[in-house]
Length: 299
Image 1 (spheres, rainbow, N blue to C red):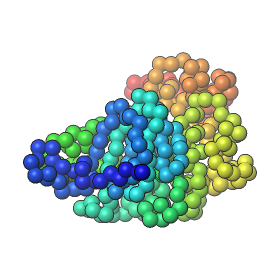
Image 2: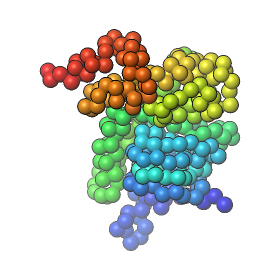
Image 3: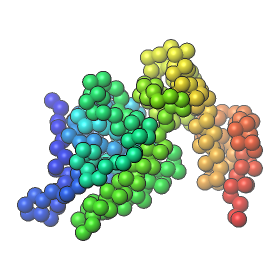
Image 4: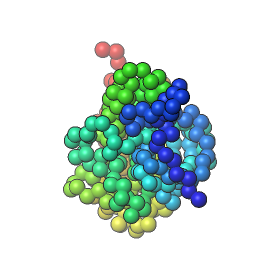
């Protein structure tokens, strides 16, 4: 039996003797140590931002590994749960689009909005993995203080609380939507849905040794079909995308850490440091050492 979660239980004023409900259909929960839970469904939309740790998310019968930086959207009516949680820390933002007091203006015109927040009825008629993708460490760092501020407002119930919560929610969702990977040509969102498992795998496991066969295990497609659909959606093959993720991660580590270049290459998924240096120069037009010096010099 699937448990159904009601939105109202998250909206009660904690000090109210009459079960007072807040005016805005928006709530936030901070799970510092998410525990495994039973399969359940929601009468609201849930945005999940994974802060750290690892676990398994099972949504609508689709199983996926999650870790810090993963974004998930659980559409209204969907079923999901968490399993095999290992120091899993996440933030849940719960909301009802239809009951929010302001419209989303032109946000719904962005492909990222359509990709993350599909029509609930159509989504449930054609079951697929819950929408989501992986954000960069840089964006996750930007979101954390906003999430902290929103969580503080949620708990305080001071005058103007709903307005401030809603403002923070719009800012958070706007940043996430802007970062969502969408097709470069056309308005077809189908490849993005189909390839979400591959995207999540590449963005999550880029530091490990990955072959084309490892990627093909994540999706029921032939190699040629996968390459064609992936290229249509993202302008490059899965292996080229993997290389891009690795190089972008390495570029960030060169500036934000004191790790040696060979260690950065290893952590970014490059087994050969010479190959790493060569491909880094091809992408950024400079060597890793020159990149570090340029971006860490005090102006």
